[in-house]
Amino acid sequence: MSTYETMPFHLRTERLVLRPWAESDAADFCALLAERGKETPDVERIRTAIAELLTATEATGIALLPIQRRDEGDFIGYCGLIIGRSSAEEPEIAYELLQRAHGRGYATEAARAVLDAAAATGRERIWATVGAWNTPSLRVLEKLGFERDHVSTEDSGEVVWLTRSLP
Image 1 (tube, one colour):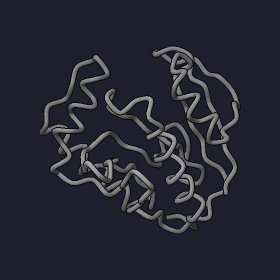
Image 2 (cartoon, helix red, strand yellow):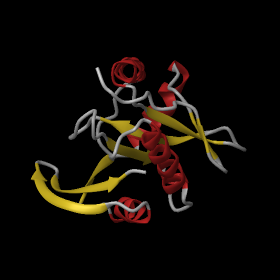
Image 3 (spheres, rainbow, N blue to C red):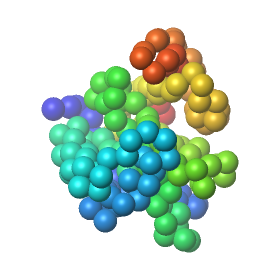
């Protein structure tokens, strides 16, 4: 499908481990989605979503990966590359953390590892899209060297599109 190398699916940083999804992640994934304050899918639906993520990973060679803290071993969110609003050639970085993990630099640390993994595939540019209201997420992307490209309006409000050249 693509002329790019497959992204590494096991990433380690000083404090974090990013690895492929397992069915056992379903309850933690549900808890994360519940924090959005909208209707939370049931665990069976999440197991199906995990299977779909793994299938997409096989097809595209990029992945959204669960994040665990190395010392504690607990699930704190996800980070990775998705097609999202962009393409397999120039995928989008995505991340979301449990509220208890906010404000500790985990998103930046995980995203930096994912950007290195993206560069290893031979890709030259990565996108990010973030709700204009999401100041903490915009700050993470700024720290990682992303630059604003444009703003679009969707049903959920204004979306900021950012890009970053690799490596």
